[in-house]
Length: 520
Image (cartoon, rainbow, N blue to C red; front, side, top):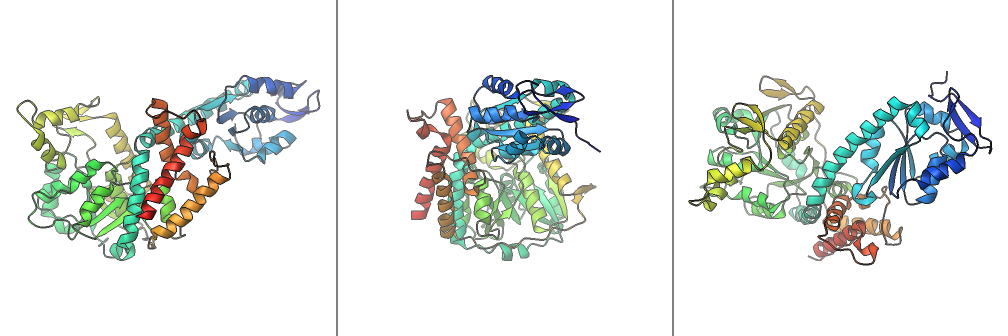
């Protein structure tokens, strides 16, 4: 039984084969090649095309002729349609072209997310054959919705990368060097964690001021994992923290680790988990208090490459949602084998006019900065009203970004199969802890630089589009940063366009970083 949406293949007058559905032809019955040339000539230049409808493939072949550097994502409803269409020589030939990727509605979103790189590909072009879109209107509508949803995710990712791409790249190289120098035995550290306890995940939301009382009363029941923002608040309440998570790459994260009220070193017996993207100044600050430090990777391609370059992971992988340290803390609890977690201060909202719990670094910062005309309350109000507020209930407000953080946390708990039982999130299965190898920075750089140069040598050192080269993908967030600077006019391209290309700029900057840290 033929399950394809197409019903037959016929010969056009010029001898080329074209598909039909119930006698509706999807190309010209006289000269499909000339029709395809006209189709391609109407399209503006782009490096990435999404074509709805493969049909006989002639329009796709003409696009590649006109724009040979372009990559194409070609969409049909299901695999049966592709099997049917591959009986046409042009389609069979396209299926073997590495620049053309066939996909169905089922995997369309995934293919867009994995293959379209905004910083490299620039603008995306989405088009279709008019007859295909008319005949398969519902499929076309569904496909466009999937594509737009994927592009929204990519736009959000690109926005973050364009802001932090350079900071992350520099931080990672510094932290990798530190990790190698510390000779951290992650396996020994993680084996000592009492995973039979309940992991208390401490965020710095305003509800912590009240819920912390229960934590104090039952402290021995919990293994306390604090976000870096909540760390000082716990210190000031006299609560010993077992572990602290830090993912922020900005210099402000350094302020979380000033222990101004402590009579003794509060970090001495605490485990500190730093994302490789985290600010190195914060790492160095903690190094003065303890060597009880491990590094993690949260998905940055350079961090992932470094962790796995030797075949065995060197750094624990943590989910961080959209960069949320609370999710990273919960992910750490899951990764090391806790089956029970309880959340404190994970409000993702403002309560009674307060954005944070008492005792965070902002209290100290604002008190030092206040004067007769601008006190700490005024400064908190500025923080509170910096974006549009949404009313949840009386004296409870949120924002669009806070709601997205909450949704990310909910999705994480659901994905990891943590189900709420009263105030405790529990899961029946316990994750087995991975084995981590010691990280060798010099060996990593030798392999990384050689692989990176190979990707560019293959493209005559002008640019690189070899997505299969893992070293090349490590440049993508930095490419986004350079692309943003070029587009905003903050960087002026040289008259030679190659010099101004975000890819080559990211490549050269990364070589600068590797030379700097290799020599020191």
